[in-house]
Image 1 (cartoon, rainbow, N blue to C red):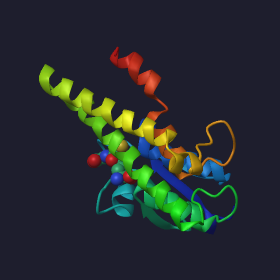
Image 2 (cartoon, protein in one colour; image 1 turned 120 degrees about the vertical axis):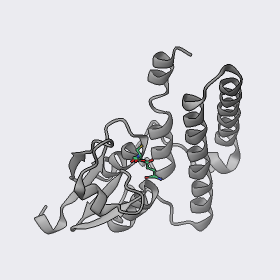
Image 3 (tube, helix red, strand yellow; image 1 turned 30 degrees about the horizontal axis):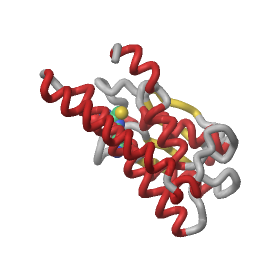
Image 4 (tube, rainbow, N blue to C red; image 1 turned 90 degrees about the horizontal axis):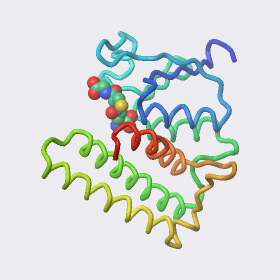
Length: 181
Ligand SMILES: N[C@@H](CCC(=O)N[C@@H](CS)C(=O)NCC(=O)O)C(=O)O
């Protein structure tokens, strides 16, 4: 790939948001360079590329920065618009997919609240909230609209929702062991 078409990802190894971008690039087979950021000492390049949020991930393509993981994923699918597609062409399927992508994001945020909650009562509440969200997600997976979209964990054609699920819940076992829950 010529310098002018270079793809560079800024991220951190432990970030589920970085993982989304990494998975998308790998699924599409797009070669890229990776810059590991130290979030307590952000690089000048990161601050220049994402002056609004100052967050990773950032993708730089042809020298132009794109920030926000979901924006990046859509950019990747639109720019390298060959199979496997991350987003369906069908508007209803696409709407359904976006709906559940938003829900998985909420599951992630509820997990964040659990990890950051202090005191038995608030931990219990946060834990119950995560369980409830996971229950609804599981029900959703079984529901027809979701099944129609189909999760492809065992095959190729991983799409945007699969990426969200894997990046968000993929480390679940490791987290369980670490937290001892
Ligand atoms: N909405 C953003 C969230 C990204 C995000 O929260 N990144 C965190 C690391 S996981 C970050 O860069 N934090 C640095 C900071 O907040 O200063 C996305 O989807 O990309």
